[in-house]
Length: 172
Image 1 (cartoon, rainbow, N blue to C red):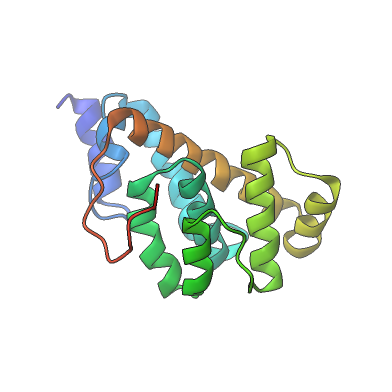
Image 2 (tube, helix red, strand yellow):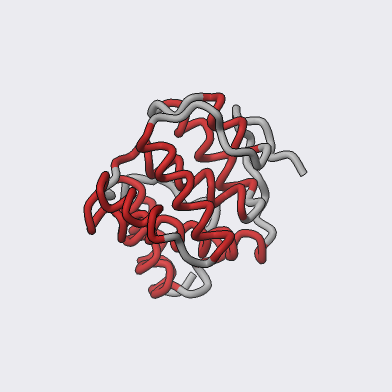
């Protein structure tokens, strides 16, 4: 590794992730991009204005939209641990709108689906998100979708191997 790669790897390893895995392995080939990406991801995953439970829900919707098995394998168990109901997780895996969601889960789910599928959100969906999460929360929700889309693109292109997980693999 170059000095820049070593420094970028150490930043990931010494941060809350504790290891260099998944998208950070191929990103190591561009150390400055890796450093910036991991800082953004650290904020979005651990400190976003919408909280960890809803961030994990947004990550799952993004993983499903991109058929990203690594993201799913890592984040489906975390989502369950932080309170996303298994029925919601299973419905997202099947590309179905979950029947039973809390209001905040429903708003996050619909926002993410619209953003991925329509490349924008409706005025009503935006207003619902704004009412619940405020401006920073809406921007963080957009950031979560964009960041995890970026990681999905990296891992899909690099053909990153799906780790062993307690989560069922995404169906075709």
